[in-house]
Length: 282
Figure 1 (cartoon, helix red, strand yellow):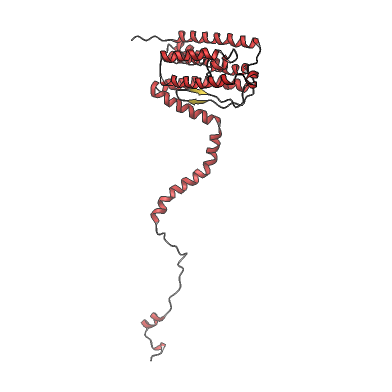
Figure 2 (spheres, helix red, strand yellow):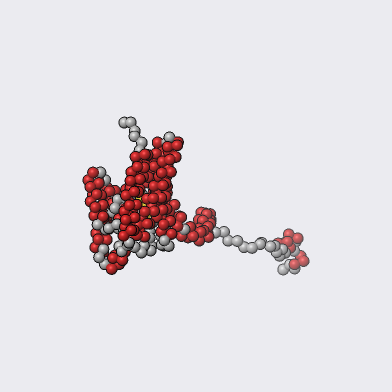
């Protein structure tokens, strides 16, 4: 047996221990590298939405969001039939009308919602506090057609100055909508105004609405007649209870003022329609 010193240089090199070296941190390659690449943008989006959720919650709590969103939906619906320009103008006139209700309700200290728009049914505000009596509710009801008529009158005036048939037609539609709202049936403005005159006026208004349905039948008018009929029945049934008696207990001069204001406003709207009517040659 040979000693270590008798080994050849090549054999000594084989037996010499290797010098240690730093391999660095050990990394394990993922088995599904493609899944990680695909998931990266979704993880980033999730983190972004998580951070933005508080902003979205705050926006949805704003009254202006619900109003503007319902306005956009209405514009889109009306644009299918009238074009986007007329649809925008019409929805803005509806907004002016509802703004009148909103301002008067706020003036009375009532808790009221922002205007909400319902395609082909107009717009509405929600009174969370009921007015104390028919006089105060009549004032809220009057404010919509009055401010709405002023808005239509401004459009009519500009249309006359610019000789614009488009603006005149828009003004005519505005006057017509405000006049239609004066039909003395609940829940239209005219019905809330008529409550301060006498509930029996509702019956005459309902008969006239049914007559209009026979003259110009359409699905929307049928829906309005049904809603009005149910609301009329409900209010007529409740007219004799203690709360209703207090609601209708207003001063005689208030009844006279409401009646005079009602007919004057209706007459002015008819004149506005006459002034803004554009006759087309067929």
